[in-house]
Image (cartoon, chains in turn brown, cyan):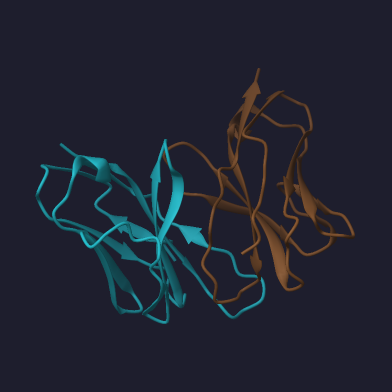
Length: 111
Length: 115
């Protein structure tokens, strides 16, 4: 499985755009990049998934460069409720492989 | 669908006792995961089932832990005997493997305290 590296923590203020970058140098051809969000006392929740270039949904955008060795989760105009841990995962989409989480990035949004 | 349902939500037990955690995955999902989360070790994968068969149990800490999935709608994680270091939040998740665009859905977790 491709190993992922993320910053341990980030701080931001309400209304700012937050970009969290994940490195995955050993990503395989069939691998997709998936991000999950976890609030305190809750299980992780899927945010976004992509293979290359850019993916956008109602929650976030995911930017993936051509070499796919990294990806950036972009949260526009964060609010206090975006304070959470964000996990980057790499694996084959819909494949029969276990879902392994790294340490994640703890985002703290200040008023 | 009500999502992944775990029970109990909280469990307090004495060291040496048997503990059984339960999980009902989302109907139609064919994969199920058990995780353990602590501040020190983060979110650890314990075991992964696909079509009720254990595919990867390399994360099960030791023989005191066992997991079963007798059918597609139910799984248990048993700890016998329990120890204080087993105190953690245990999450169950399910996913539909083999289909493009799938994501894993997590339950609310069981907070286990072993005293």
